[in-house]
Length: 159
Image (spheres, rainbow, N blue to C red):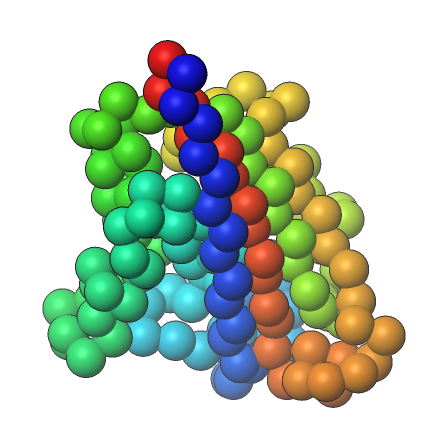
């Protein structure tokens, strides 16, 4: 059995807007996340975790921010690409663990919807998807509510 683990990390700053997209779920907020794509920081970290497990670079190598064709893109495109590359190499995603780091918006009320969306996107059972949040105790850029960070780990299995 071949088991691989990968980690991903991403950050996006806040800017004008009235919602953030996290794991494909729009969450009301008094700001939006800024980025070249839709800035779904959670999907970006999960995508990089999959690429990491494959030793297959990172999201910026596959979808360069310098390429205008990805401007405003739905981050599901990136996630699908990484998952397809894993499947093409004979791997299945065993589980995902993602932590969102922010003071606001509060993630708890939306965590189950985010897990369900990830399950739909990746054809994973809910008991294989962990999504949680923490604050940074008002320290650093997340503590000053300047943006959101995400850390993700995934395990790929080939049997």
